Image (tube, rainbow, N blue to C red; front, side, top):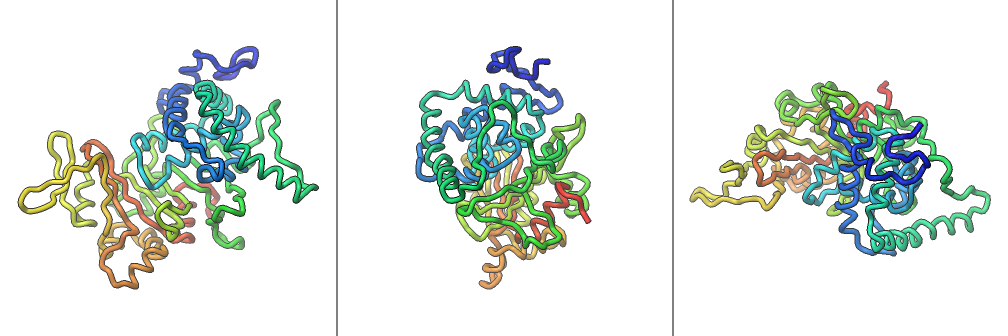
Length: 386
C-alpha cells in the first residue's frame, strides 16, 4: 500500500503531495509545512562551520520526529532544527506564530506524512544551502562521531539505516506529539542540562511544550487570566481546543538567569487591561492599529511591528497569576536579584504587543526551574501525575 506522500516505487514525493496528509480541522498540508521549513529561518542561515545553531547536538541525539527527517537527509533535518529554534527564540521575527503552530501539528502527523514533508523540503532547497549544511554537518557531527569512536572504541557508533526509520522512544505517544512534547533528550557536555535532581519526584522536562490542556489551565490560573488566554485548535480532534500556553526550558540569548519561561497568548479584547493594570501603559486602537499613549499632550507610539513592555508591577503578580504560578515567578533567579534591589517592578515578566489590533499579545514569565517543571508536568500531562 502506497503511503501518504510516497510514490509506488518508493521514490521522492512529487507535486501530488501538495495536499497529502491534509487535515481539514487543522489546516495542515505537506505543501504548507514545506514552505515554512524552506522559506523561514533556513533562508537566513549563514555559514558557520565552527558551532552551528542551538541544540544541533541535542537534535542529532533525539529519537522523535527529528530522526524521521534525518532518515531523508541532513538538509531536511537541519531545516526542522532551525524551525524548532525559531519557534521558541526570545527575539521575534515576522511569521514566528506560524512556526509555533507548525511544530506541534507536524509532531502529530504519522511518520509517512512527516517523511513526505522531509522529502519536499530536501527537493526545494538550493544547492548553495545544501552545501552550507553539509559543511556544518561535517564540522560538528562527523567530527563528534570520529572523536567518539577514537575515545570509546567499544561504544557503538551512531549510524543511519536508510532501509528503515529509526524507532521512536517508547514513551512518545500520539498524544505526546499532539501537545508538542519530546521525550527527554540526552544532552551533550557542551549544552546546559536544565533538569531537576535525578531522585526528584518530578519527571524530567522536555525542552518545550505547546498547547496546554484547557482543564488543567482553568485550575491553575485565576478566572480573569484563564478567560483571557487565547485558544488554539487541538491538532488531534476536530472542534476541540487547547490553551495557547507554551513553555521552554533553555537559556535565553540575553540572560543566563532564565532557566524556564512560560508564554501566555492573550486575546485581543484583554490586551489593554493587562497593559494598563500590570505595566501602567495605556493602549489605544484606531483604524485597526494599536498605539501606546506616550504623553498627556497626545503623543502616541506605534509599535513597528512589535514592542516589548517590561516592568510588571510586583504587587499585581499574586492576584494576576494565582498562587502556584506566582510562586514559580518569585523562585526565578532574576526575580530574586530584583527583589534584593527593593524595586516595585520586575523585568522577569514582559508583554509583547503588535501594532495590529487583531493580533494577540504574549505575556512572558520567567519561572524557577523546579517550580516550572512541576507546572509543565500538570499543564501538558506528558507524564502520569502522582
